[in-house]
Length: 106
Image (cartoon, rainbow, N blue to C red; front, side, top):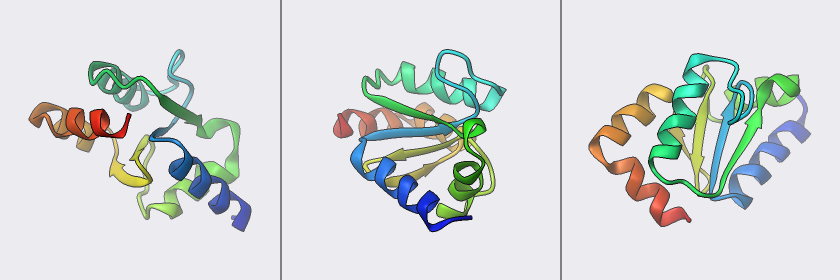
């Protein structure tokens, strides 16, 4: 993995309030977990979501796993902080915690 992939990821998560690294796009998710993550963000009324399709860039796909030391995709970042994948997002949504974080980030 190149240092530039890490730099790109760092820039993406710090310059955008809500970033979802996923397979596919918000309009056309390429896996069930990515689709679920997008549905959750929409249910939280997240307005300014930036999605990054890891299938388009092998360096980013590998780099994001190393960036957060998290082996799976999707990965959600809010205000530069790694939140988690689809399962953690679901738990946080059900408790109301995710809605609060997203509202504060926008």
